[in-house]
Each structure stands twice: as C-alpha cells, then as structure tokens.
Image: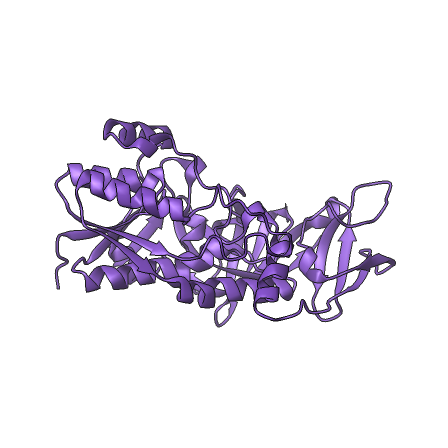
Length: 375
C-alpha cells in the first residue's frame, strides 16, 4: 500500500527538529508536529543530593514549550504525547538494573530502539501520517539490489547519530525521513534563523534527560529511595590484574570500565577500572595499557543494511559514541551473537555499551557488548 503524503515531525524543542519542521513546511509538505513527554523533570530534583536545576537536558518542559511555539509559528497541528510510563518501564528501569549489575547502559540507544521510533510511528498512524521526520544526523535510502533499506552516516561526521540508531527495523527505516543527513550543523542553524526561528542559536542538550548533573550514582540512590527500595549491598574488593587485593569499595554501581577518578587508591602510576565482576563484587583495576582489548563479544543483534553474514566480514566498529570506528574482522559465533577481532587493540571496551558495525559509511548492524578479552 503506498504511503500517504502526511509527515509527522518529531519535535524535541531543539534547533535540529525545529529546522526540519520549517524546512519541510517551506517545501509545501503536509505536516503534523509530535512531541513525546518522557520524564517529569522535577520528579527527583533535590532528592538524595540530586540538583534542583533542570537546565541543559533534552525533553524538558521548556523544550515542549519551544516545540509548541515553533509549530504555532509555522502553522502546523501539534500534539504532545504522554509516554512517561512506557519510558520508565523500557528505558529507566532497565538502565537502573544494568547499572546495579555492574554494566554501563546507554539510555539514549534504548530510547531510540524501544520507544521513540516505535511510539512516534504508532501515534503518527493514529492521526493520519504514515511517515515521520526527525532531526537526527543520519541518512537512509532503499537499495533495490539488496531489497533493503540502508542506514548511513551523515555528511556532518561530527554530528553523526547512527551509533544510537542501529536498532531501527526495516519497516521503521522505510517510514522515516532524515532531512539533515546531507547538511552541516552550522548550515542548519543558519537555515533555522532564515526561517525566523528564535531558537536558532539554542545550545544542544548535553545531559541524559532523567539524570541532572550527570551523576549516575546519585540518580540510582534517588530513584531507589523514591521507589522504596534500598541500594543493594554490592561492596567488595578492589583487586589488581593479578588478583592482589588493593582496597575496598562501597558498591559496583559506582564504577564503569575505564574510570580513573574515585578509586580511593594511591599508586605510583594512574590506575583505571579494567573489569567489574557482579557475582563476586570485585572491581579489577590496572594501568592504561591493561585497558586495551583485541576482541569483543556482542549479542542482541540487529542487522540493518545487510543480512546476517554467513562468513567472516570486514567492518569498522564504534564501541562508544565519540569513538572513531576501528577496523575489525567480524564473525557470527552463535545465534544472535558475534565476536569481533580488531586490527589494533581498543581502549576500555565496556559491557553494556553498544557496538555498531560499519562498512564504509553504511551501518551494517550492531549489538550490545557482553564480554571482552584484555591484552
């Protein structure tokens, strides 16, 4: 069935999604503005040391106001969708559980994979739009030869957001527009100004929407306190790479692989967290060189621009958002599981983070890091 011409613009209240709405409206497209209300920004403010201020985060009440104002300015219908319960169930609680288990999750990827695109497309269809447009810096197109939708890195590599989008399905990609994929960020701001948008110079959000101040440990304490739950006792030993006990810690939730500060140890050379062992509660520390890994294992895979490979393939892999994709050989080792061997060892491969596989600029697929081998 052919798609209709109505497009729902996912409006976050930032300059990028606002510029998308203005651009598509100027092209004469039939638009609807949609905003997902995900989290009550005042909910944990001031609790267990959490800051009172809520500036600098995406999806705030101020962002909703800005999105509505832009929709009114360009003259399109606007809807605010309350998705707070689903956001808490599918993003916040898994984030808490992962952190308590000694892993380092990425809530923005969880949000995109399991909520934003799914909920936006569902709501869009309910109000008469078959497609959505977002302000993500990414590109997609349909490849006739492969009979697949292909997700690619954008023209502005400094704003590349494909790392957070590897979970999109073929159906979701077929119904999503990324109008900023060919643009550079300064040009987007200029375009927003040309369309008379007052937020053309609005700063980009820097913090995770439900964690003001960026302190994960403070958020965990505040959230568990609100839920009437006590922080589990995961205290244990700080140990060297050889197993020597160096000290004691108050809980594995306070650590992430690659962390240097807050270890409470004196050493002639800097020490970093190498591994977190949730069963024994041991936190292994070592030197910067000992953070290097040749391999990673990932599961919960999603193949995007290619089918699951039947033999080894060459890729480049991002192991975190700001990581430069590194050359590696990838092979499927079991159902929904791959192992990657890098050409050069990579620093601080972290369980709970995403590994996204690229072939050139195309996103071949991605998964969630579960284990790694230290050099």
